[in-house]
Length: 101
Image (cartoon, rainbow, N blue to C red):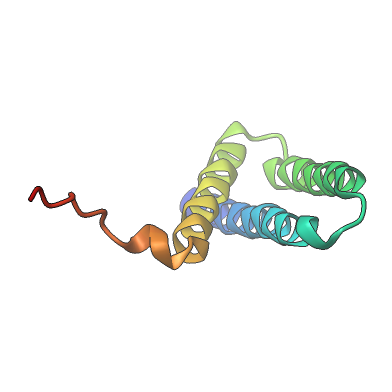
């Protein structure tokens, strides 16, 4: 097997882990205003997402540092894509300078 295939699969797995982690964070933040007790929600969500992602990184790594690096690249790529896709519409507008009269 070539070196490229395991690294590409690790990057795809990292994107999946990133989508899970940051998508779960987005859902948690959206639920906080309607939740009676937001602190336990935030803590449990963080611990659960972190445990799943750490276990996923460990499995993907398989004892090879190159795979965990590729997985991390995919994880961060998922973060950048979600931030771009989920940002509010008002953040897309370019602020205009006030006209002086």
